[in-house]
Length: 202
Image (cartoon, rainbow, N blue to C red):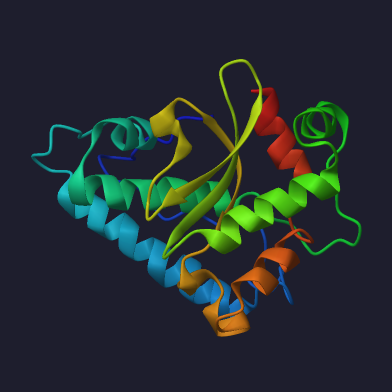
């Protein structure tokens, strides 16, 4: 995973690699505007304000997530999580599925892509409260699905995050209200499996 370094001592808001309406109807431009332009920006501003005097100045975002506690960890974790989340998407695509070595690894670990989707969606739907469902790889390249509460990231458990679904309500409530499972089911249309595969190959 690429190290995310501050610029002149500060972290910057991620620039989205697609237009604000590119993910519709799965994620509306309205939701994306609030989620990226307000929620993520708040985490960036909060982290930049908390870093002076923390002993973590100049460190990468990943190193801060590994070393920090309290509010610094929460804001850094949310930035890292959201950066991975927003950069894994593309325009909706029917019959969207992985290929190559990633597909082989999914089939080997979970039986089939359909079985994987069912297990992963259940992890997202059953996570109590706010947090994230993750597909990660361990040190041997084995695939693991985890539930991470609040701002937690799999790197804190020695895993390499590959793909995630955000189950904080701000990620879906404007479009789906309380129907979290419907939101999770729709996200499969916009996962950019080339990005996920590249993370797996790193």
